[in-house]
Structure formats: structure tokens, C-alpha cells
Amino acid sequence: MSTLLVSSDSASQSPTMLRQVVLWIGANAGGVGKTTLAVHIGYEMANRGFDVALLDLDSNGSMSLFCGLPKTAKVQNTMAAVFSESFAGNWPLVTPNWNAPKGKLQVCPGGGVMSKVTDNLSSRRRREYVLADQMQTYPLPHHLVILDCPATLGTLNDAALAASTHLLVPVQLTYKSIKGSDGLLEWYRSVCRDLQLNPAPGILGFVPSQYDGSEAAQRKILSQLPGKLAKIKIHCYPQVRYSSEFNNASGKGVPLHLYRGNHEACHDFSNICDDLTALIQGDKQNG
Ligand SMILES: Nc1ncnc2c1ncn2[C@@H]1O[C@H](COP(=O)(O)OP(=O)(O)O)[C@@H](O)[C@H]1O
Ligand SMILES: [Mg+2]
Image (cartoon, rainbow, N blue to C red; front, side, top):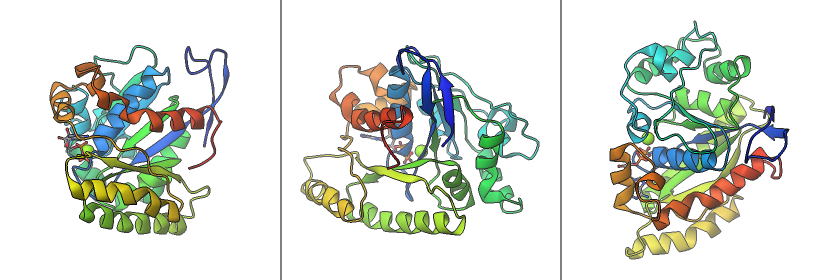
């Protein structure tokens, strides 16, 4: 984990040593709320005064949509540039026009060009380390870097994991999704072992997502999940509730906080952000 000497208005009152957290947000399924989690955590952390970079590794481009940014097909304006052999440190970061009032929030767009990246990675030497290498050679100055990852657990995700310090896993409260997370954990352990990641990124926790308490099955799964995860020493965060307003906000290209600032679901990310704050400030050890 790199250390930043940063002076920040509300991240700390005086210049202090802060640690950069690189958060892998992923799941081996689409539609579980990865991008929603990335954008809302990013917004809340920026609002707390931290500088945040959201890196979109997914070819579906939903990060740009959710942040109200135009679609871009040009390699040099996307994360594809960072993966190219000619990358010289010019991170193509853009700022949504709703930037958080305190910290800085920037996005490095993904989109269709990321499919090519996935294809090309297989022929690269050190393919699983490409992102980690670029981040080490050309470090981002942000306190928090969030990697919004695709659902396919292939080489691109291996590279994202190798570049990260922590993982956060949204999980829907369905039997299929819970079962699927076994495969995710198997993949995580094998990548850490095979790539000899040292230190291995820690699992910050699982986040039950799109929780609808009117469904008995969801209530039952939610009541059992924290205990099951505790047995394998994984933290379970409080659920992010289901609300159609998330969908509405994403259609407007803004986080829920800026669409319905008084909506109760705006608070559903606070526990995660408290832990990220503690990690950045060095008050908490690896998850
Ligand atoms: N808590 C939630 N309640 C209701 N809809 C949600 C919630 N979280 C995400 N969604 C919606 O579900 C869809 C998939 O979410 P998204 O974050 O894009 O998932 P992923 O990145 O895992 O594919 C989007 O339309 C999004 O607006
Ligand atoms: Mg997504």
C-alpha cells in the first residue's frame, strides 16, 4: 500500500501521512450493483474530503452513464490507454459535472474498447501485473482508487486484483448469487497464491445489495449471511436497500445523493465509507 503525504481540507486538518486504498469492486455476476456501489462510495468519500479516482474496467460503460459522462470510443480517453504498451503516465481522467463539494472525484472511462484490452492482454508479458506496474510507475495521487470490474473472472480481473489493496463484493440476496460467491472466493485465493501477491489484498467485506425486505427469501438469506461469512472471517456490511430511485438517478447520470438527497438509501454506504476512511488514515489494518 503506498503512502501519500497529503494535505487535505477535511480528510485531515493538518498535513499528515495518508495511505492510498485501491479498492477492487467485483462479483462474478452482472447486475448485482458493482457500479452503483463504486459511484456511491466514490461520491461519499469525495464528499468527506478525499480525492477519489473511479477506474472503469468494464466494457459495458455503465460507469460513464451513471456519472453523466459522454460515451467515448477513443482508446486514449479510456482505461484502454492505461493498458497499452505506449502508456506514459497520462491518465485520461475526467470530472463529472456534479463533482463533490469537498474532495475531487474523477473517472477514467471504460466502455467497448475494454473488450480489446481483454483480448490483447493474453499476449502481454507480465499480463496480470500490467495495471499494478502502471500504478507503481505512474502513481495516481488520489486517496481512494476504485476499480469497477467486469463480471468475467479472467485475466483483466486478475490484473485488477494484483493492483488492489482491498476487495469489496456486492452480493444479491438470492441462493444463486450466494452460491456464486464461492466461485469468486476460490478465484481470489488462487490468484493471490499463483501471482504470489504479497501482501495479498484483504477482503474488506461483502455487501448485500438491492435488498427488498418484503421478500421472505431475501429476509432469510440476509439473516444467515453475516454468520456464514463470519465463519470464514469475512465481514458482512449492512445491506444496500432496493430502491427504484437508484435506477432513476443513474438515468440522470448522478448519484442518489444528488437526485434525492433526503432518501434513506443515501446512508446505506456509510459503514463502508467509515472503514475506508479509517484505512486511508491508517487507523485500521487490512480487511
Ligand atoms: N440498491 C438498488 N436498488 C435498485 N436498483 C439498483 C440498486 N443497485 C443497483 N440497481 C440497479 O440495478 C442495475 C444494475 O446495477 P449495476 O450497478 O449496474 O450492477 P453491475 O455493475 O454489477 O452490473 C442498474 O440498473 C442499477 O440502477
Ligand atoms: Mg457495472
